[in-house]
Length: 430
Image 1 (tube, rainbow, N blue to C red):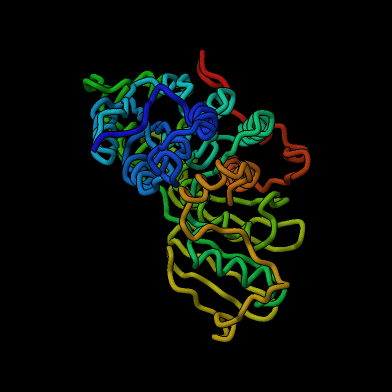
Image 2: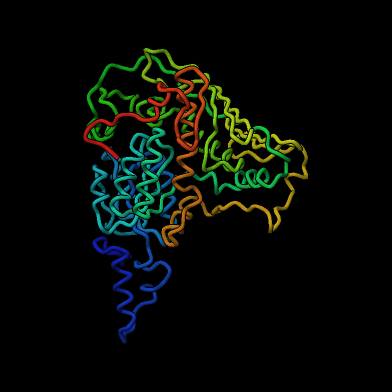
């Protein structure tokens, strides 16, 4: 089958030309104006083709006829080629191009939106560049620092970008249902939330610096992170998550899922707690890994709700004045203090939370078309990221911290405030 998509012509240009053609007295194929016509497809560039980038995001978008993958990029040449081949096989053509430098995708005028699936330290620099170039953005969570949040919000709103903090949880019926039950008072007044998240990894001292493998642009992989010698378990699949330069650890990886549900159900999705007291154990100082291995945190919100987070699971539980409801493990079936809670019907006049049962990718495409915010917009992503960064700062300092959500600063604590941002390695910036 031949593609009727020309990668050098943007969707917006095709919309204009198609509109002009309608006025001409000629017969054209139905496919020109159908739901999967080129003029109605959203052209996508994918940055990051690792396990999640290719296996979840790229494959997820390829399911939809109104999306057209036109470019892929990865610092590992073999991965970008594999992603390109997957796309071209899907469309039965050779139109998709692969790149090593993500800036080439940003520079393409025919790309409507980018999908960012990189380590955390690259999320916001790439998202900012894409938004400034007029692209909509579907970006993996979380931010790397508190300060990145207000910066990307300002850029997104200035450029009228559709920005989705990319996680599937708000489309998963279990988490949507539990949040609606709590928001609608089915357990009475919410008192406390209990969340368990996977622990971090503890590894021995890293191997000696090794030669960078052929086909791997290690300098680009580091990007804005501090200069560091290459070693295999620095950049390996998910191993970078345990290193502070690139991530906030398993705590921020999994926390962006379950702690967002906590915020959602507590009706605090656009704000944060006002205190945090975190304790953690960290790997030995000789280890390459240096994010929290085990942890326990206690947050309090301005509304009096207490949030307890600990390592050792993937569950979430809400306790109220009239009962409790929980999902004891990742996507685990809901349980409650009274079976009637789970059978409760949310009435038409009650709170109905915005979701998209088609998933995060369907939600993003719909919002690119409507120009409305996705179910996990930039401000909400910033709030849950800030909650987690507050916890990491408390754990690293080993003390309780007071936080002002309006000023987005710690109260009377210069040391903690100094950890809200990190210096980027030149020439990278937001």
